[in-house]
Image (cartoon, rainbow, N blue to C red):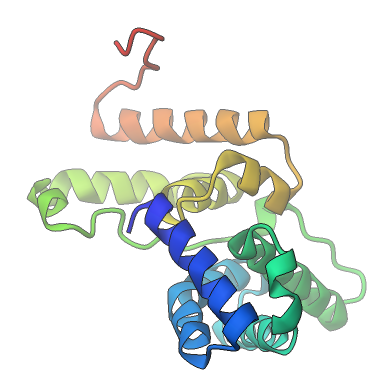
Length: 195
């Protein structure tokens, strides 16, 4: 699903939940975002069960506050931030003295190549890409996952992780270079003429 469709879908679901208290729209929102938010929370709390509880609480709060849902400009980003905050709160409860940095967040990637055309890619190349992603530092892997798998905009990633858009861009550039090196190709930016 491309970012435009995903964003429109979430926006439409948000409106239907807020205006019509549409339970079917709420269930669709749950199906759309639950797994992504759970993977994100698992990277922080290191427990899938705890992550599922955290994300479920976020969804319950969304339903309970549905009358004010239209006040939220970007519901998906809002839910990522709520998940992050609840995950960090849970960690703080578990260990009063622990601190967490972006380097500590360990996120697993879904396969980047889900559509049939991409399955043509050789298994060897795909394994090289996945291996390169697995060996990225936690912070870089998280940013790469949010940008490439979850199709979040750089500005949204920056807001979620409290970093600048420039840092997001820099981290992605480093990640792409490492992945390109792993598969034996080079990465170069297009100039303004498109070449």
